[in-house]
Every structure is written in C-alpha cells, then in structure tokens.
Length: 232
Image (cartoon, rainbow, N blue to C red; front, side, top):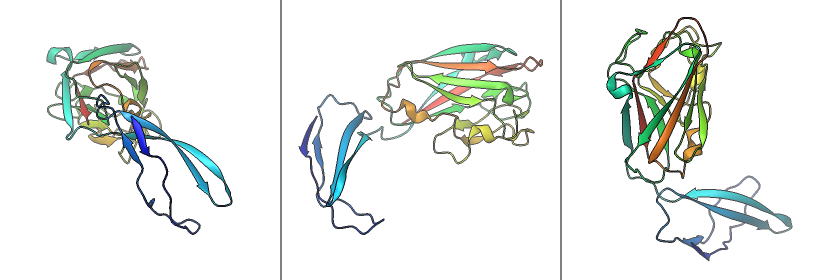
C-alpha cells in the first residue's frame, strides 16, 4: 500500500474535548490485499508546547457483507464421546474459504434444546459442564481458551450446552453461568475466557482444532454432537 496524505491538523481543543481531524488521511491498497486483513499504522501526535506521542493502531479493511455459518455434525451425526478425566482433540476441516476473518463466533448448536444430560439433540450433553475446559485453535496455529471449568461460584453442575454462542460482544462471560445449573442448558450469548478477535485477520479455511478436557473423574461422561462457526 501507499500513504498519499500522511498528515492532518485538528482544531484547537479544550481539555477533555473531542473533534475530527480537518482533512482525512488517505491510503491506497494493493489489489492483492485481502478483504478483512488488518493494516497497521503508526500515529504520531504533536501539539503546541507538548512532546510528541506515538501509538500503533490496526485497521481492518472490509469484511464479509453478511455472516455465514459452517456447521459440523460431529461423528457424522452420531456425536463423539467425552470421557471423564480425559482430553480429546477434534480436527475440524473448514473446506469452504470464507475469506480473511473480521469476526468469528463459536456455537454449541443443537437441533432441539433439552436439559436431559443424555440428549442427542443438544450441541453438547454433559451432566456437569463445569468439569470442562476448552481451547480453540485456528488454521494458523493461534489458540484461545474458550472456557475453564465455568461457574460463577465454582464449577457448574448444570447440564448441556445448546444454542450456546461464544461471542466477544456478549454482556456475560461463560465463566458466570450458574454454579447450581439453574440456567441450563445455557442457551444464549456468552463471552469466552479469551476473546475470539485473536483470530481477526486470519484464515477461515483450513483445519480448526477443538481441545476439550473433562477434568473430573466422577462418572459424568458427556458427548459433543454439533458445533457451528459464524464467520463475518
């Protein structure tokens, strides 16, 4: 890319006031620059009588015009077992290229929500979801922790995840679900432990990996049935 207009003035500002710059900065991009890929800029601010200050900002260029979803019916629709006190790793081959990512939400989906801990129609069934720790890794190898033994006052004894969407903009974190399971099957939007915007600017296509650890040997096995990516 190329910077065509690199400087811009601001009006006189009182302390704490805000204003737009008087003329826009102008930048040109290479034709090969992908939609959704970030650009990094170094901004230098100077003011009369004050030392200059530098900051680095990332600006994402464009995004998909609409959210698209990719659904994975685990085990060809029969699910996969989550043994107690054991970790599993699922390789999720996202073959359709949705372009460079601006945003992604991750959902434990399901065709019909239920509080039964053996339900096969929820996204994930388990009699104590507070036993679970999960990490998601993108095709570039970048990982974030989705949850870590969630529960507001200790690991939750609630059943199942169904229509449970992990979304950076959610008001409540997944760690704050009710310890006594009163909000099972945890339908709604929740922030993950680490934000999914770590994947911004990365690829959508390729092999995603989901790590799930059941941390407790208490006879409470679960099953992962259906997950869904929401790409923007």
